[in-house]
Image (cartoon, rainbow, N blue to C red; front, side, top):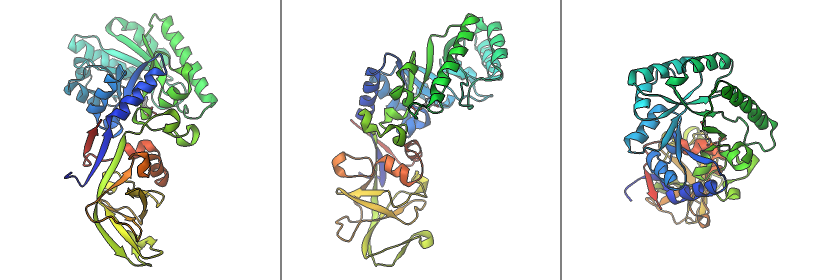
Length: 373
Ligand SMILES: *Cc1c(COP(=O)(O)O)cnc(C)c1O
């Protein structure tokens, strides 16, 4: 291995997670592969998901969808975050479905349809309570605009997004479903009956079968992580397997005396003589700068917590006086097999006051991804 650090991506875990979810629902599975497949690698993850039972792909940005097409992936694909001015002509040419959440966007898409001589495929997003994306006050006017142009559009889907599906028994979710059903009725009243109805993210997929409808949008659970460890428990509760293991070399191992102040600002003082390991990963690689000593690395089944602040390219861990690690050894930052006693992605998230989503998606592109299984 000539890398100083790498993220090992277990495609077998992703396959197993998709198979598991697919077996638990009669809905189609859309694999969410935005943000470079949550940092796991767009194309390998998309291919694995499609081979394991997913029949759709979903991304945020149009350029992510175009990247899938350029890689030769022709599965049905939605890009749902397309601001005005996006290249809808290329979306249409690449047979990419786009989401519409305003009249202005509808007009741009119609214009692109006219200029290409093809019928755009759209999914209408409605705001059922999250107050982020989706049609809200424009809805009635939008319906009029839609009715006027209906022969120039292929309305494939109606969809919304839940704000609190990761909180079991939270009434906001059922309120959103009710709200959604009203939108669907009103759409049907103007004679539009989309074939694909989709509301559920991973949390709703795991907890709310009544929200599955015709398709679920599977994100974090496909990567073997829980949408919310505190409210839903960790991924093992759902037999999901984390797919990412992050490894890095120790550039240096050295002994340091009790009382040493370690790192920028001298924020950590060694309480005893110990061996420090310098790990070749830093915040520019996506290691959160504010990670506390509740996370670290693992070597030979032993945990070595972070000491002091994470730097741009490196951080320091406390290996312990009796550690046999030497310069050049690899350590596991997170992931690894259960018997290796490593920190989990969830432990890292907790130590950095964030969520597992942010830990994996922020691993930088300068960290190579190595695919296994
Ligand atoms: C990211 C995203 C998802 C996936 O969410 P998870 O919580 O990762 O399952 C689903 N739908 C939309 C619109 C998204 O942006």
